[in-house]
Image 1 (cartoon, rainbow, N blue to C red):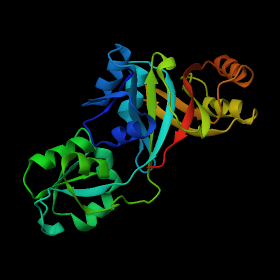
Image 2 (image 1 turned 45 degrees about the vertical axis):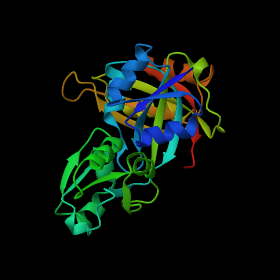
Image 3 (image 1 turned 180 degrees about the vertical axis):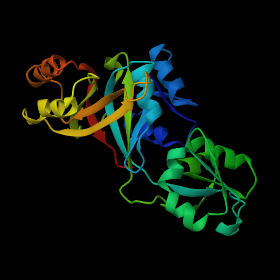
Amino acid sequence: MTTIGYLGPKGTFTKLAVDTAFNGEHKQGFDTIPECIDAVEKKQIDIGVVPLENAIEGTVQLTVDYLVHQVRLPIEAEIVVPIQQHLLVHPDFSGELSEIKEVHSHSHAIAQCHQYIHQHLSCAKISFSASTGKAAEMVSEGNTHVAAIGNELAAREFGLKIMQENIHDYPNNHTRFVVLTKDKDNLTINHPVQSEKTSLLITLPSDRAGALHQVLSAFAWRKMNLSKIESRPMKTGLGNYFFIVDVEQPFDDVLFPGVKAELEALGCQVNVLGTYPVFQMDI
């Protein structure tokens, strides 16, 4: 049986994405994103699913940096899931918002609900946890004046009460999850493909003026649409960056080799992080 790893425990948005995309496979939670990625690399699990980007808070930098600097696994699919953040409390809590002394959740979930916390929970202590599921688990075991920010699945899994629904600051809240595997023959997602995408890792030459403009031009004149371009530090010194570029089309034998040859002629290094289908899930 195929084993699918995810950022756990039960009740995380990653688990929600996995449950939506996959059916009867065995599922295993991991405490951290690196642990899940390492398990795929060591073939302890067949497939790993980790968060990559949120519409409100942007890139999950730990995922990107670990895939670039530590374990280079190909991205074989993307799952896009709508995110609804709720305020979860112990079932025995019957007080007011002002009586909540602590709020626990993942740093991205806290940031997605910044305005709500500022307006309604400004006196509560904010504590960061490894995941929204871990925060919910902690609240289920703790005192009644501690709350968590998480989803409906977390409330069900840990017997919590939803005190306030949809507390995220912006309504169009989605998260991209990437599916990693060393054997894509194990990968089956029984949902219609929304689009195709190719992610590239591009390193610019350090001493060439206008290099980024020339890189973008290589895509522009071929009419290749870029949905994202983001810089991240190479960790080799100040001012040294690589770029993650998402191209809204699958890798082909016509346009992409031409782009790669043009960029390499400029002194750039180009690596394909993945060419993959995108699945839009309705929760």
